[in-house]
Length: 114
Image 1 (cartoon, rainbow, N blue to C red):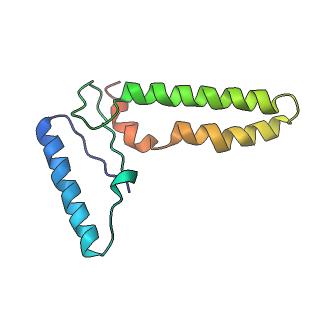
Image 2: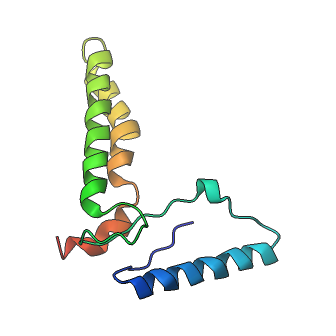
Image 3: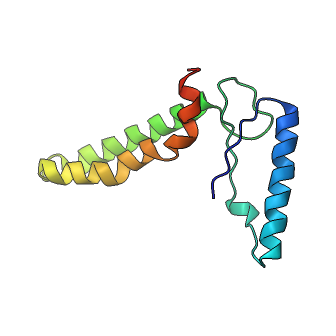
């Protein structure tokens, strides 16, 4: 489940907490539970204000860039010498490309300000 809401102030952060309580209550009504250990929060804002929620856009890009460089290096070291170009492309599309495009819709509103 993805829950998207702009959080630009403390008031909006409090509204998020209220919305999450409503979602939790609704799941409870359906005899379902939300596993808090698997829940993640990420702040989607162009500023560095985080209100204790998670990552800012700059941190996210840095983390994903590092991860993609590591995987690209591993692919090059293991497949460049023996695998045909088509195999490398398929490995790229199944390992690196998903990292770059994951949750791209969530970041879309920030493109105007960045």
